[in-house]
Amino acid sequence: MARQLRLSLRRPAAYARDEFVVGGSNAQAAATVDAWPAWPGGALALVGPEGSGKTHLARAWAQQHRAVVLDRGSPDLDAAARGPVLVEDVDRGAPDEALFHLINLAARDGSGLLLTARKPPAGWPAALPDLRSRLNALHVAEIEPPDDAVLEGVLRKFFRDRNIRPPEEVYPYLLRRMGRSIPDAQEIVRRLDEAGDGEFRPVTRVLARQILEGDTQNLDLFE
Image (spheres, rainbow, N blue to C red):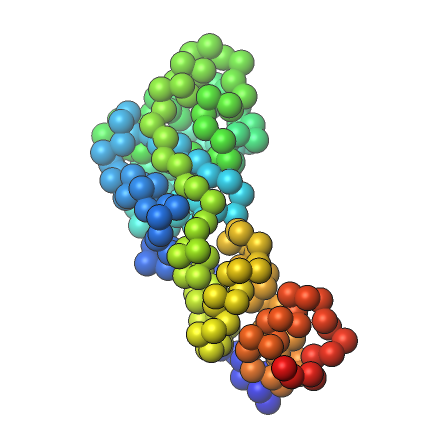
C-alpha cells in the first residue's frame, strides 16, 4: 500500500519558471533571460555545462512567452517569423543558413531567439562568414555548475515531486557526497525513492549512506 500511495502522488515533470531554483551559480543568467525582449538584437545565447539547468530555464521562458521550440537540425523559418523561438544544443550543429536567418529574424518587433549550448558562440561550428560574425556578436548568459544552494533546492524539488519529506540532516549529507549536477541530484532521489519504497522504509541518512556506498545487500541494517 505504501508503494502504491507514493507512486500515485508523484508530480509530472514540468519546466515552470517558479520551479527553477535560483542561486549564485545561475542568478545572473536567469535575470538576463527574464529581461527579454530587451536582449540586444533580440537574441540570446544561454550557455552552461550539461546538467546545469539551462534546459529548464530555456523551456520556462518558452512556455511563459509562447515561444516555438524548433528542431536545430531543420528549424522552421516560417514559425520563427511569427514570434519568439527557442533552439537548443546549437553547439552540436545547426544549418548555417537557417541559423543566420534566425538571428536576423530575432531583431524584428515581437520576435526573439533563445539559443542554448554547452559552450559560448565563439566555439560553435560555422562555415558561413556572415554567420560567424553574428555568432561572435551574440549576447551571452552563462550558467555556472550548480552550487550547494542550487543543488539543495533541486533535491528538495525532486523529493517533493515524489511526495517524500526526508529529515533535514539528509540534505547536507547528500551534498557532501553526491555528484555535482542536477541530473546527479535527480538520480540519487530516484534511487532513494526506489530503495525505500521497495523495503517500505523512510528516506533517511542511513538509507542515503547505504545507497551512496552501494550497500544494496544490507538495506535492513541501521546505524
